[in-house]
Image 1 (cartoon, rainbow, N blue to C red):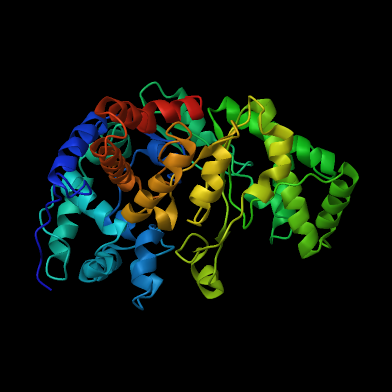
Image 2: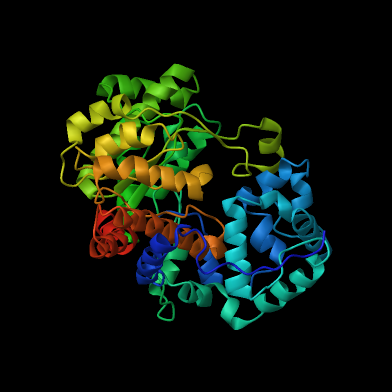
Amino acid sequence: MSSQPLSPHADRLLPTDPAVRAVARRIYESIADLPIISPHGHVDAALFVDDAAFPNPTTLFVAPDHYTTRLLHAQGIDLATLGVGRRDLSDVEARAAWRVFCANWPVFAGTPVQFWFEHEFATIFGITEAPSADNADALYDIIAARLTEPGFRPRALLARFGIELLATTDDPVDDLRAHRTLRDDPTFTGNVIPTFRPDRHLEASRPGWADGVDALAQASGIATDTYDGFVAALEDRRAFFRTHGAVTTDHSHLDAVMHRLPDAEAAALYDEARRGSISAAGAVAFRRHMLWQMARMATEDGLVMTLHHGVHRNHHAPTLERFGPDTGHDIPATVEWPDALREVLHDFGTHPRLTMVLFALDEDTWGREMATLAGFYPTIRIGSPWWFLDNPEAIRRWRASTSEIAGFTRYAGFIDDTRAFFSIPARHDMSRRLDAGFLAGLVAEHRISESVAMDTALLWTSTGPRKVFSL
């Protein structure tokens, strides 16, 4: 397939009606260059400690990005061919994987993946041709050459991208050495903070759970041979994360239920888990109890809870065994919020120090559940569409289904939720363009004034996230 021009349109994603587009363009221009606040993502903090050159285009754009590799895998391409799970690709292997990616460029047509890549290739690397089998090696050489330049090192790009805050996602036992090194480095001007992600320590039936609990004891210096010690160790690690700048805890389980058990029952389940005899039902009950405990702890230390529930993790066992988790085979599940959160909201729903941000892959919950909850409980905020729903049409549906019910002020801000560092500005740009188009439509219908639309765009992009996450 011959190469096509690559020139992202200045008005991409803005409304098609010329009059509305003009309003949207003004709104977008008012927020387009604001600093990026990224309170949830998966970029490794060590990237900025080492500040080493990125090794090659494949390792940067293809192999670690499950958004990309899952679509290619669906075409029958083996993930090994794409370098998934490899950190030591030779130039020959990296080029071969890149050729497969470029030859299959049409696979991404109409998806947000293509939008992000076009933004990255054109605005960061100055590439003017879309990838194809014909130009794969030429594009590889262009990108590889640029990656050797000082301006393409991680720290320089953090500043170039205008990323004011970047949060990583970290296990409670992590020593946060990279974050500490960045904090103490007078030459580092960025702000990279950790996020407390306790999922594996709350799922008592997960393989390796007991080893994780032992590691928690070692990290905290608190014995975890009892339930009380386990809870105390988690509290200690939360405090440790806070001293390193953390503002959030992140949680992702199959359901969102938070249900407190009597202390004796929780302790008995913990003892069963330590012995390796806990039942599947008992493990679920324990995890739901510990999520309630996470909310209770949040009322004391003020860490914001971000809830990414409703995912069938590692759906394809053979892929998990070959390549590990986060390799493109996590599948959305339905999630139910009102009953799941009823008990915790009864206990803490008006607590001034608790904030819970709800993210869902189940569109049916947006207006019916998330917006109505956020429209009453001061503790609840609406999270942006994420993962499979981080696409233009879903974002438009989400805005339409939540704004009229909860208003403009109950939104927590956009999250990019990405491991692909170079895609962060592209993802935030997509969000800002779609927000501008949505608000312009309301202006055109004379439902709000253009000045209110400008103020709202600023709220959604900057002032709102700062307030929600206490930045």
